[in-house]
Image (cartoon, rainbow, N blue to C red; front, top):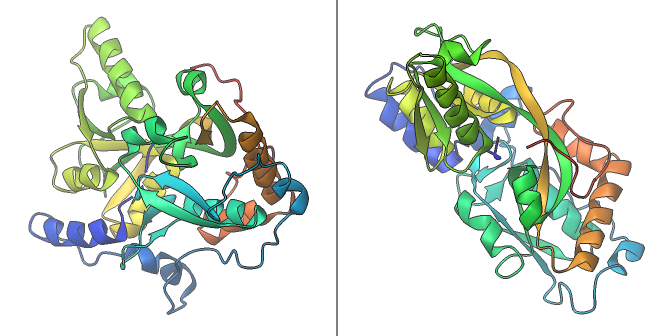
Length: 315
């Protein structure tokens, strides 16, 4: 898991062009039109309307003096990971994580800007260049040792294969993956898991898994559709969304695995600021707004109800 993340709308369009040369696709779904395909609405869906969220003075008062003085909550995200964070056709960041950032900012009485950044560069820049990282970061003990993390969603991992599963990929036991080539995104929990599974294969006297790491999820899906790799391992929300973007050119196999909380990443050196962010997220959960945001993006049963700071996880 990011851990993990999209096919951005812009990249998805390129993916369609690239794949038509190698794979017979009837159509590709533009990321911005995903909601329209679900509802029949001709208007492209670009996110949950956060304009009705009222600023909460008691939470604003929790902010340290001078915090967000410029009136903007600056958030970093790797915008290639639909439906969590990706780029609309005009290059605007959208997705449920982007809507969460907007909603938090509204509670705090400020605006938000989601900045596109390389996933594995975000943590180091939080607290200096950015106020927070909201980019499908899976909670791990290693990350919590360096940063504060506020949990907001529970996401597992899942495999995508080419429609029809021509390679017969069976992830019910990961030893079944020995000898296959599996695509993952660099810096994700799935990359770590596949590397560990590859080691388990060799320990069992079986061929290693060839783990192929890509800088973006879209590149991994391109490799899958081009039959360069046998499967892609990603966040369960991302795996499901890839089906929409490829118009059924890929499908999921196996069950959702190892569901873990994902969290907002914050610097540890400003606990007062972090407490205000935590309170804002809890307000959105208690008011039902967070669940509404996820519902708008077609995500069910993933919303957490407690914005826990640094939840205990065995990783």
